[in-house]
Length: 414
Figure 1 (spheres, rainbow, N blue to C red):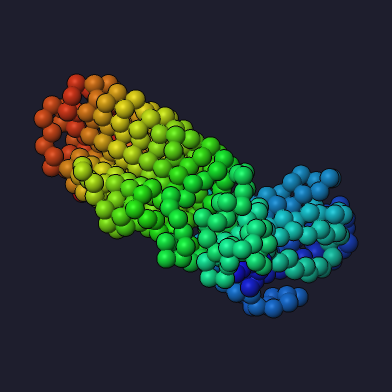
Figure 2 (cartoon, rainbow, N blue to C red):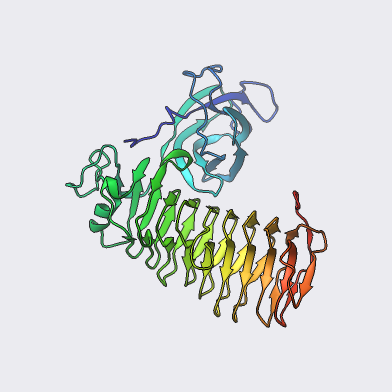
């Protein structure tokens, strides 16, 4: 089990080549600045560096550098590093004592995976400092299907539990459960549904969604107020729903949720929940076909997701009023977004294209705000009355309408 992730670690070398306010080299001028060079990743030793480091982990999308002190304005810089094995940044930092330098390695959704810090005095003189980034975590309980055992209290990373099911019995809520890579299914001892408790966070730590929760024949995860699921791959075969918020506001972030068999939906929402930066795909079964996301009530936020390969991408019903923004809803077998009953979603700034029958199917009698979306056509094709079901962008099958102001064409239209 990985406890301290040095990114074997992602060593960061801070190399200061002196430069005073006059730019004259190692002057020792404390009124000037010092050029601090920060090297991250596999670059080999630079001047004064200790050793070659390993490549930047694939889960890290950017490095955030913050330099602060009582007598200076805080310096902050974010450097994209996705796909890179190394990156070098130079910052001019005001000379003076106790410069607090913090480095954070972030995922694409802004989650801090690794963190390191140091304090330095800068006087315009050459300086070399090494800062190791270790895992940034608020974990209180630990689970590892490969090395754990369900006879501990799960609180020690050296003696983790084996199952998520058992870890949930060791908390009354408001704790983060960190889950290492592996497959968590009934064979491994899991009992479904996994019933989250108030404020419980499931944080899957395997790289590239290698922490897999494979559900049983019912709902896989049931929510509770303030609970969250992050970084997990939830792959289900005969379950009803991968995640059901259970009528409580939960957060689902940076997950891969996929169906492989008789599954009705990826995520079912009936409260003011948040689903962000996730992929929901291949939910195709059920009486009317499977849905990536079903919204039955509440005002959930659905933001920045990729929803593809489902019968219905997003199925919105009853009197719900979700906010749907920044998603890519494409390649679904029937409809991209299906709106019915008295629901009133706000659908802005999404890509809605290449869904087989209709990209946005409005069966309500109201007007839907669907502004600034990308469609198969720069001015979306609209049918009112009898739908053609042949790939039109928008169909109003009742007396409702769609406001598509600000429309543009998708990058890869059908």
